Length: 143
Image (cartoon, rainbow, N blue to C red; front, top):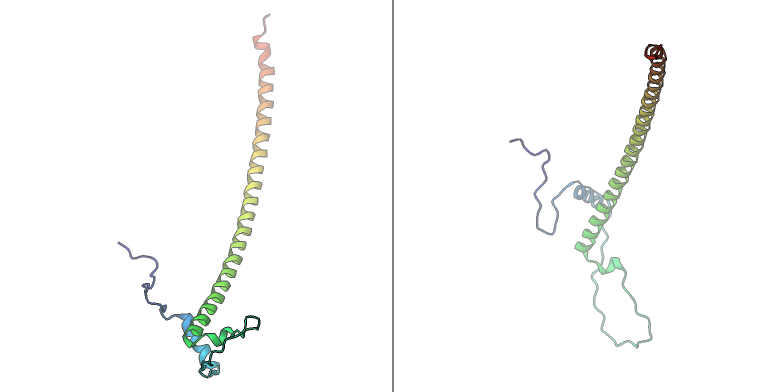
């Protein structure tokens, strides 16, 4: 038997996907960007707050540790790549739709030409049939 046309990489059950162009791109981006050092947060002593005061909510970036932030950046990069692929596929689909519409118009035009030619042949046939009947009529008349 022949081999399958496409070879898919084996799916890993681990939480990390296999290295690929996305990981390489992310590694290159991280190597170029200056590393930001976030000092470890120390937990302040808990003081009971009254119900009416505003609470300070930590920013999303501060709440994420390094691994979660890396996973999030990978997901965002993958999302951007998928959006770009979707845009390309949408453009290709639109081009195919336009080509298909043009082919259908040409086919309709061809069928219409064939039908008009067939109509002309029918009219010519009817004319010849009428002529033949007119010529044959004296043959079948009683004298």
